[in-house]
Image 1 (cartoon, rainbow, N blue to C red):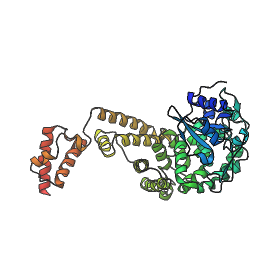
Image 2 (image 1 turned 90 degrees about the vertical axis):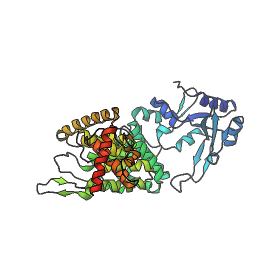
Image 3 (image 1 turned 120 degrees about the horizontal axis):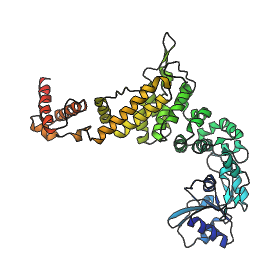
Image 4 (image 1 turned 60 degrees about the horizontal axis):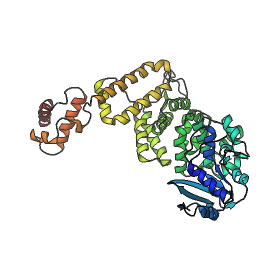
Length: 449
């Protein structure tokens, strides 16, 4: 079968062959071609030693940053192509990188060191496969399977635990039974993995189309790096509003949220504080008073532990803290929240509320869901009409306030804030004459204080 590959990759394979060396596309690019997805990276393996590879491309710009591990990066038309010599790896003392690599002449030995069968396939320029571990068949079956025995694969590099879950979530594949058992048994290997590496995999995993099923099947893995999840996994919720336990509700909420990292994280963590806030009344109904604030505090700690960037962390914490706030479908209320949060965060909050409701008893929340649609429509109209939502939107400014007799200082800001509040509440229009009258009114109030 012929596949369309970039001219640069074709040029590299042809150049290696002309010099008497083997050359194959390998790894993720072959996997994606077989999946019918356009690859993002084009990695090449070769029988040529690094110095022989450099000689083949002497007239090209070459980056030698990976030479220690046998990788030469060649730039063709500005695009980088990594060319790596067939190799066998030594033990992984740090559970991240091999202590040493040894170059080998046999492609099969190189493929045997790789993590999963779907990533251990090589392809030549004519589309012929070298697939000693049945990776192509596993791709057709939608299976993630370790190359060889699973335990050594995960013990070599603990991040492979998260990579397996990420592939399952993104591709919608099942994890083969022996591989799945080894994931559970080797989850503690994540303790040796840098937080930044777990972060990178978690981001991709949560945005995956099958993230919910992965959360459902592997809660113990997520608890390994976020032990705060443990009480939520076992939380029971006896309430008319809930027909699921805490973890299953969380999974449904994640599945209902758009595939955006901040939104999926917010739904994963929005109820993390519930176990600490649980109380049960005389009728046996559970309540979770104050859980948004506790959830926000825990979410902040958890996101910091995994080294999330400040922008993502602050947005997720905001959404978790506000996820249960009452939001009436009235113009003043919508304008106030648009003003307080800004349009982007406001619409994200609507998505969070919708996803939260989708994880609850639908018979009880149908009205809430319809209300959220009405709120969205009103908010979109307010923005389309360019209604006043911030101080900079006011038809007057600080100079007008000073001209009305207010001394320069904090009182000027108080007057402007007072005008904005009256506009948001629908008491006055954002028109210059009306606001000038409003300045005098607020001035009189300040004088009486």
